Image 1: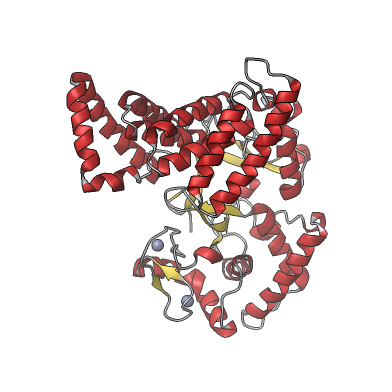
Image 2: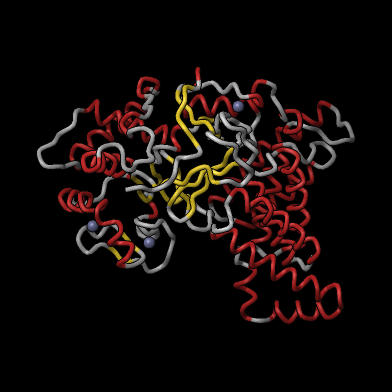
Length: 464
Ligand SMILES: [Zn+2]
Ligand SMILES: [Zn+2]
Ligand SMILES: [Zn+2]
């Protein structure tokens, strides 16, 4: 089986970082360095009836496997495509009487596949799955306890003829999944739906300011260049959200991936100053202390209200916090950005587009000073801000933001991704409306009012 293509990348010794991948030729912004299907992947326990176990699309009315009654699929095609992977699992679930947790299911899928195809599933796969890092010796007491429970439930579940595995061998697989598992999102990139193992992707080391980004597109991951990469340069992706102070990113990386990040942005604390910046009005130290504490507290309350789906409370808390932060914290301060992000999203959801648009605009301007210009999160935020402005009747701003987002997503997601295609349609639609607006503002506004009254409008405004 030949899937993917590793002509543009090769394995090399990245010194302190261990193995790494480097470019074998010069790459341009937006190039797909390689695409790779998962070695194994599973849907999260909580979404097992809502997401197809073969293509990972979220859909209503999935068909369930008549035998185990656990796996769900879009249709026969998805079920057939996945049968080879599901066969062993189906038998094991029937034997035990219920499906075990997602990590146990994934570990079993990995081992079944190793037995069937060895640890190398295609010619382009650079290392065998069982040779990936497991970091078992670095795990905390608590993690080890969890792993022991997993190993036990694995042993009840697993069967493959008479083949048995020692607790050590199984722990090795769990360790590999823990530090190499890649979260899969649904087709619109809106929700995390599962986890999978992509062996070549596992070889790409981290940098907080990486030269590549990874995106899931039609069941495969794509590693896409976000910078011009000269031949021989190491390929990197970011394992953590850049919007954290360098010390916090380092802490997360240490806890989850067991290494000290010594990337240039961490060493020089690049942009930490912006992420803590104060308003131009030079507030007093006491005031800053007060507002910072207030923001921290509010953000916790906002999160709580959000979990409880109390959106009126979320909006109330956000408005209070935005007011407090005014003239004290700058718009690139992480606390400001977090409040702006939640506020604009929830207000948009409540169709309070004008207020949402003002906040989204501020957020996007802050993001642009912090993020890499081709960052997927930035592109998505600009797209949402564009939609919000469009729905608020600010067609010029809306169209311009959508165009800007399109430029980013063409690089980070590529032209064939479902999100880019949605965005392209919105960009075309807003272009038509913008033309109308420029010809006659009155005609534009009456068209808009009529559209908002039509039954389809409600669906449209909740579209993104
Ligand atoms: Zn499917
Ligand atoms: Zn089944
Ligand atoms: Zn770093």
